Amino acid sequence: MSVQNAPIIIKRKKVIAGGGHHGGAWKVAYADFVTAMMAFFMLMWLLNATTEQQRKGLADYFAPTIAISRTSAGGADVLDGDTLHQSDSLSQSGTGSNMGLRGAVPPDKSPPRVRPGEGAAAAEVAALREIEEMLLGRGGESLVARKALRHVVTKLTDEGLVIEIFARPGAPIFLPGDTVPLPVTRALLGLVAQTAGLVGNPVAVSAHLAARPVVLADNPVWRLSSGRAEA
Image 1: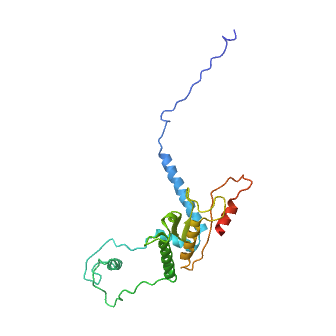
Image 2: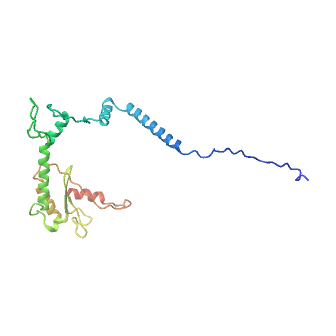
Image 3: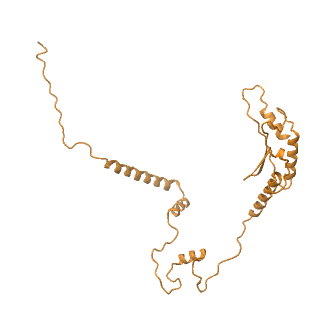
C-alpha cells in the first residue's frame, strides 16, 4: 500500500543551445600574456640587480654598433657616393678604390707590438716541445729505447709538460707491493731528469696506484703511493 502511494519525481534538465566548446584562442592569448609578464619581471630584476656599467654593457650588446646605409647615390664628391664607413671597410679589406683623401694620415704599417710576457711564454712552450721530441724521438732519434718507450706518455697542457711513466700488463715498473723501482724505471727517470734540467721550470712529482678495498685492515695504497713518488 505504501509503495503505491509513493510520489513520482520528474527531474528536468535545461539545455542551452550554443553553450559548448568555444575554441582555444584564449589559450594563445593567455600564453602571450604570461610571456610578456615574465619578460617584464625579468627586466625589472635586471634593472635592480645590475650596476650602471653592466646595464650599459647589456644595452651595447643589443644595440647596433655599425652604421648601415640603406641608400647609395653616385656623385662627384670625395667619397664618390659611398658612406665614410663603407670606404673604410673596403680599403681595409683591399677591395676599395685607391683614391685617398687630401690630408689623410697613412695607416701605420709598423709590425704588431708584442705584449710583455708573450715572448717568454712562447719560448717556454718551444723548450717544452723540444724536450718532448727528445724523449719520444719525434724529431729524430729517441732517447728512450723502444722497449721502454711503451711506458712513457707526454702531453703539453696549460700547466706545462706532463710526463707520465706507467706500468703495463705484464711489464711493471716497480716490484709488486714495494717501492723499489725496476732497472727500466731507473733508466727512464734518469733520462727525464736529464732532459728536464734543460729548462728552469718547477717540477712536481706524483704517483698513483690501483684502488684497493677500503675495508682492508692494512691498506698499503697511501704508503706505496708516497714511497714510489719519493723513489
